[in-house]
Length: 469
Ligand SMILES: Nc1nc2c(ncn2[C@@H]2O[C@H](COP(=O)(O)OP(=O)(O)OP(=O)(O)O)[C@@H](O)[C@H]2O)c(=O)[nH]1
Ligand SMILES: [Mg+2]
Image 1 (cartoon, rainbow, N blue to C red):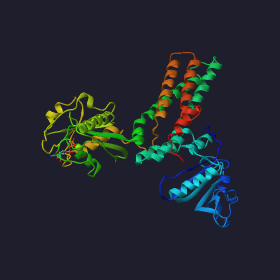
Image 2: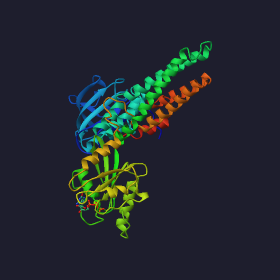
Image 3: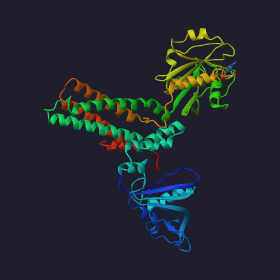
Image 4: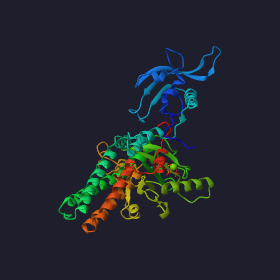
């Protein structure tokens, strides 16, 4: 089915399930007349033009009725009482007419109200369609629209701060500034092309080169924030692996602060992956405890060991736990494919001199010596993890941070094109070649703002949203 961006759309904006209040949102040119068909004011008690006649940007008490079902006295069936907000275009979230119905948050009430709105002429909104309309309506650029979902998904302070950096338009403004500077530089070069009697390096063109240099530095700095932004947005996948009985589950429980995993002195206690969500230094962390790595004929344990290897392979950080009292070392295939690894020598309460174990680890490897039982050395392990993932004291509140892979790719591509352009001009290549790379770089940056990109790219971005936003 082909949907039109002019349809009036409806969706539930609050999470599914029971709650005190639910918000059902309508947006589009017919939003008021659609709402009129099911909502009447608390005084009139009759379905007429209640919402249409409400003042703009006001909220009123009313009732939701099912216009098609009449009870014995001929009145339409009452579904719920509600508060209804009316917001007329263009000063609204979507830039269109919006009605928000605050009903009670019961599953049946909410579904029935939505069903009635769809019967009254609205169409069920697609995921992210309200925000897509805010973008199409020109209220926000694409980078701000993308940040909306990041704010919704943010689980930690740093995730939220990074997302808000995008939502507030900071990324958009910085990219717009760079685009404006590059456009100015292109104009300078155009002057040099049109009036070749001016020497390029003496006239406006030399300013253009300075601008290029500055902007390349600015873009590289932005691009370098992605490592922090990615962690803030997606978190760190941390996996505990190692031989049976090494103390992985004891360490897991220490990280979680609860008895999440079963601990016994029987090797092979943990069988399946045990996952928990944590916050470490303001970042979301998924920690996974795994079955001890060994060859085994036990079919259940073998599946557990395979899962452990897969989890270790996909880790951002593998904590490979080694029993100081009975050390064994990972095989070459047991490390993370792309992530980092810390060898955690555990049970130092039983054996404190771990130098001979360290000697058997790869040179320069990150090593921590701990006792998961007493907690000795665990603070240092935390600091080590922090040092691996945090760039000094990155200021998420005041610095622009890139959290989107799409933005990072476009920035890097623009940067390479600008470097080419700079290189060409330094080599004295024809100015139209210099200008062409500059133009392509500007186009890449404009894509971050959502200019000149295909509908497919736009749709793929908004499909990642939840319905109702
Ligand atoms: N002395 C001492 N014992 C420890 C330490 N850490 C764990 N243990 C003990 O070692 C045994 C195994 O601990 P677990 O945490 O279950 O080990 P695991 O690596 O999860 O073992 P599997 O699930 O079998 O792979 C238990 O008896 C723990 O109490 C430690 O730092 N010092
Ligand atoms: Mg275990």
